[in-house]
Amino acid sequence: MNNFLQQAQELFPYTQTLRRDFHMHPELGFTEIRTGGIVAKELETLGIEVTKGVGKTGVVGLIEGARPGPTILLRFDMDALPITEDTGAEYSSTNPGIMHACGHDGHTAIGLTVAKMLHAHREELSGNIKLCFQPSEEGFNGEEMGGNLMMIRDGVLEGPKVEKSLSLHLWNDKPLGWINISKGPVMAGAELFTIKLTGKGGHGAAPDTTIDPIVAAAQMITALQTITSRNVPPLKSCVVSVTSVHSGTTFNVIPQTAELLGTIRTFDLEVRKTVLERFNQIVRSTAEAMGCAVEFETKRVTPAVLNNDGVTASVLESARALLPNIQVDTENYITMGAEDMGFMQEKVDGCYFMIGSANAEKNLNYNHHHPKFDFDEQALITGAALMATAAADLLK
Ligand SMILES: [Zn+2]
Ligand SMILES: [Zn+2]
Image 1 (cartoon, rainbow, N blue to C red):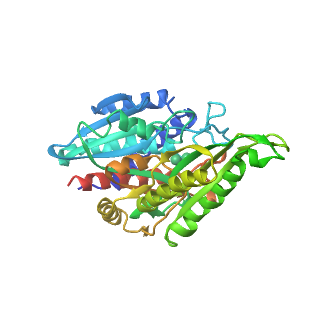
Image 2 (cartoon, helix red, strand yellow):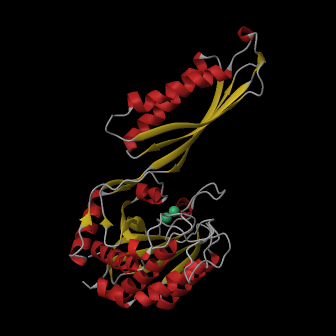
Image 3 (tube, helix red, strand yellow):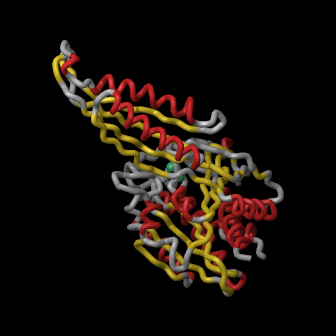
């Protein structure tokens, strides 16, 4: 269709200017007022229909192709982190204690560059592009839910109905030139759990007159270890960790209650189902066996990000045609990090790909969320070109 690589190269000054401006003015989750305002203004200037306030501070732009066809959502996250920047860059954060330390400034700039390129070629598209600028990817910030789920609740996947999604992350664990496009799991799904056991308190020297919640908690912690060792297939990944135990205040009192907190991490949906079933059974029956009442809750933080085979194969084909000199990594590159794009990919077939952005020679190789984190801006060109090409190819 087009050479989006050449166009992304030509647009680099635009992309870089935006990225540096966002970097200098980082905003935390659900406070992306300035960032979202610039996004909306840029999209409106192009003549793209814009909806603001989707998921609080999210912004959505719709590019309608010349011919009818499916709607593809492209997700770009906009939020920064509560970190004091220490890069010494000329475009360092001007908001004390807040920093774009994950590269979302780059993602937002890529999104606007992609909007520009695809809007210019809308006559060649069969279907629609929904540009989704998401707030608060980095997590709770005290909120009940993150930006992705909030946008879904506000209807971002409807009107027109989204059929496929694409998203990316600049990836500083890998050098510039590395690209990963892989089928299946990319990021772990995370749940947190809370358990409250209630027994009957009493004298430490008269345990027979009490129901000891500490002994019940100890049995439960041990029993929970058998989920990964005895219920999950040995070649599948899973973590069940009890990370907090609270009970009792002194040496001669058997307390009334014991509270446990922890987390569960899985990639595979079948494994997750098994783990949650076993978790419920073990918690319920151990409490019962020990004579305690139990209240417990598991709460989904994020589902795993699972790449759909068909969409991923299409993105891979686009990448190989666009970047013939780059060896695309198709090995499952899995991280235990969580990413709320898992919510959208649970509802629509999607592909989440990664663009290597580190450059050790320029000292641009600190990890994500580090105060010295910065990436090689050349990765913005690859990211924008691949996102535009992959989206256009899906609408051919
Ligand atoms: Zn991050
Ligand atoms: Zn991130």
